[in-house]
Image (cartoon, rainbow, N blue to C red; front, side, top):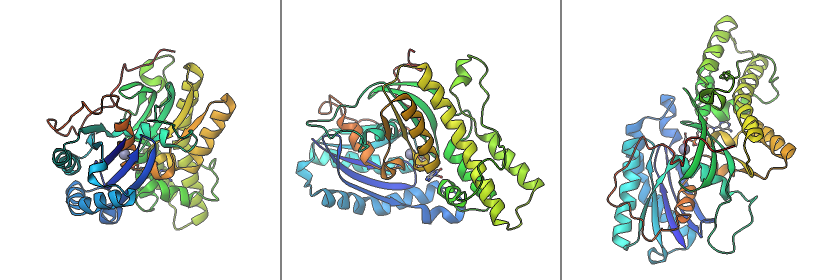
Length: 355
Ligand code: KG4
Ligand code: ZN
């Protein structure tokens, strides 16, 4: 089964062709970062115009890279939400037009579910003998620039959400922290580089939300806005004044606080729920320190570890096409009558899985 995936929810224009839900034949990503850098963040109007400009070329490259002809496709899938509405519209409308022209089904994919699903593209999983079916009961941490969620994946559309962030996302905390430290955008990789050689214990930044006992609202939830404020006040009291050793210590301490807040919830969930694997996805999953700590947690508990490959951590269309192929009724599903949904939440079976 061959699926063309298209992703334009934010500032990456991406297309990919995936065979049988696991084999990524092409994965083309045009990152718009350079167009937004001067503004210190994504400008929606610039993003949607760039998608219009480059998407046709990106789709052609994905098809050529896969050696696929239009007639070989079994379905077209595109991100339908959540994301920037004018950006989503570009990719979803292009996918609609293609699907109608080819007479093939169109699948509207949830961006967050696709991020969660990207862990199954990990090379740690055996290649399938036929169309790939994902394992169930996998605890997945999704940490990106716009979202932070801890969820138990059972099957597509059946995801138990344990907790989300009350305010900033983990990547957003890194992006804002980097700005305060005078580092570039995106902040995650900039902080990771600046932290090299720094002492992660130099400044005891807060580790996010304190859970109120067994309160389900806070037990697995995240909060990062206090961390950025703590850095702001620390810098006011102790200006950096170009001291590079102190910059490394601060970057390492800040990164450590973000990573610790994430892994504390993961560790708790590993101990409290019957899970059969541990995964991590989203842009922040590229972070070396986070990956190391998750490796340790999985090894201590003998859990299979499914860390999204770096190419599939940040926004990409391979995860979109892969998730589409997991739909048992792909031939019957048709999203051509639907519109984009900029605030679409993760499709969940229930908000909380059973222990
Ligand atoms: O998943 P993504 O591409 O975008 C969203 O859908 O939000 O994630 C982008 C986020 C940014 O906040 C960026 O700073 C962060 O991922 N990021 C990292 C690293 N690479 C990207 N954070 C920590 N360490 C990294 N190496
Ligand atoms: Zn994303």
